[in-house]
Image (cartoon, rainbow, N blue to C red; front, side, top):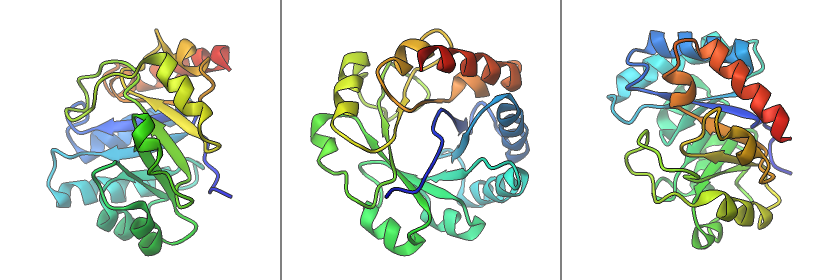
Length: 211
């Protein structure tokens, strides 16, 4: 059985839109207050020490909220801050090694964007991040947008929980949820909003309409 996680509104923090650890914490807490269910730290633009500072602050801030902190890629940072999970891409550390080092109770997510990449899913994975669904400028190494039909097709191939990612916002959240995914992952839709709290509330409404 995979480790349980509520993927319904998955916030991926952005190091450009939230340029300091303190701003990441502020955005995360506002988003959680508005209904975000997962927070991921993804900051490839930052040096490791700054990422660690942010991870430690986030872990402390989220303590008691019931919202898990997921670290993108960096296993060392996840171990130091005792994160709830790690998310890896196809070119990152192998999932079996992440599981071996992190232990059985840590949540592990894997990025998938094609039929071929679905073959890399193993029993060590707890959830899948499928995308990019729509074109996105937030993640510079993101692949070509797969669209809603391919998202639906890939979702049908797995029994694991799936969060859709890539170019998702309040205008397309409902139609994305109607593909049968378990949640949506957003970056700029919350991090770039004037009010992360209000943006999260609006996204929750769209998610509910798409359930």
